[in-house]
Length: 45
Image (cartoon, rainbow, N blue to C red; front, top):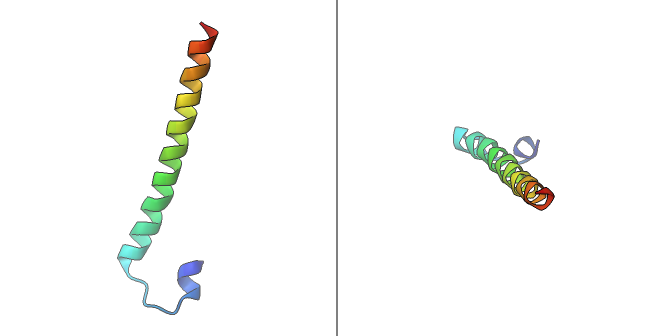
């Protein structure tokens, strides 16, 4: 969406970066959830 609004030529590297940015964000979210899950499991023991 933002890429279309800017009138710069869209290079494949921009699309790749946007994709990896999303992947990294989801990865960090999963790691946070995993840490919270481990804490809950440890607390329940």
